[in-house]
Image 1 (tube, rainbow, N blue to C red):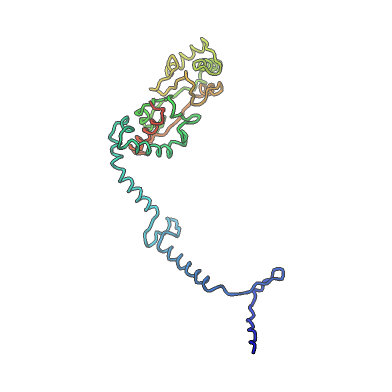
Image 2: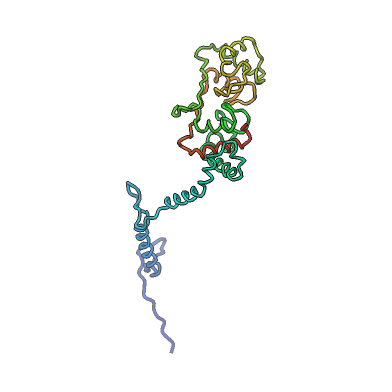
Length: 285
């Protein structure tokens, strides 16, 4: 005898209809509901156990006291402890001897590279080639000297950084305040003639103006003076540019570039490592 087909109970709909299509009001699967409940319970437990809820004074610390920042700080402290003997040796060695030292030479250069990329590359470029107004550190043209001792002193105390009493300081006058435009034009022509740029021709008036107003810092021969940070005007390296318009602006308004002093912000070892790295780039003397 054939079995009668079992008639499935009619399932209610949600009451919504889209283009004649209705949606059944079936209950959610039990496994899905229990998974949802478990995730809610897990989330509450996580918020209690770990830092989670933001408050005005900071996030709740959690009953376990875990901190990802604490883990990072512990890792940094561990690395610093392992490197402490190398750091001490870098501080004890003569600056010129650090790079060639078998024990710390590579460590110092790599550390100096990290310091440079973090704190110096924003101005001097990632390759240390500089930019307009920011010196190139891989050539041989140094305003304050390119020996490793000079580099260290510059990093340590900065340039025209008023907050540091030992900063390197010099000031070029704004000649536009007391020289005429014609005199400044003569100076531009004379300075251009000293380095062979812009097709400039040396004139007696320009030479006399230079000797009276500029030679005290740049020297009678215009080759500069590192003691006062006066650049060499006879080469092809120009910090702000060598076209007549830029030279006119420089002489008329002067320049006053500032480099911060890194003492107090970097450790002595970091400053030494940065000096070693910069000196190793090939422009140091």
